[in-house]
Length: 321
Image 1: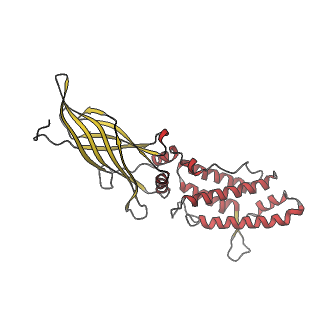
Image 2 (image 1 turned 180 degrees about the vertical axis):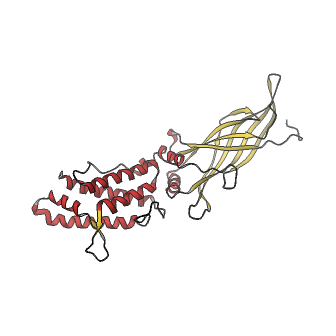
């Protein structure tokens, strides 16, 4: 056994990267390395298992405060690692996520908050001495550890946007939100509708990439620039359906129905204007980033409503109904 004069063994965890395992979705994998304070070349460590207690914190973009975002509880890794004590060993821990926790992870990414990790737990290990070609067991221990990624700590970790987006994409968050683009066929000979189609395609890609700033901004551009325009005749210059879209749609409507469809298209313009006012809660006309965190239901409301209305207008524009 280790004598009382020998220095106690301390474990040091260093973050390496994030990943996802496809057969356990949703989840997050923390790739890390483990080292000790051992200096002797003849001492070896056998890790029999590690109990991890894992929490994810976010640093609020608005004021820099740190708050607990997700408490994933504890999990035990039985993966055995044997390594020379004065070197390090690579390990990975898979933490399962609930759909709700994944949504929190996405929400933090949505408004640009930084993520920090706190990993605490216990390591079950054995210490071996290597002498004359043989390994001799010296000690069997269970050692608690706490590993905190913090702003003032040398192991501070702020995963890159690419890493976080990759975690969202690999967990197939897009599929969970049912974000298939419901646009149908592309518009024919109508630049305004073509622009709306392009913006909504970018918004859908934003879901896939985990770039929800893009979802809000491209949906806003669809509503504000592609589908509506200011009504100069109105004292408050409210948004209405673009004249060129309305006229192109009415060209394909039978004469006996034109009056009714003029009214329908006016109502659609009002709906689009209302959606734009909702969108402005998160990003106004000239802003390049969102200013308030939307609910996922808000994202789906704006995206799907704009997409369905664009599909409807495209159908009338194309004259294939």
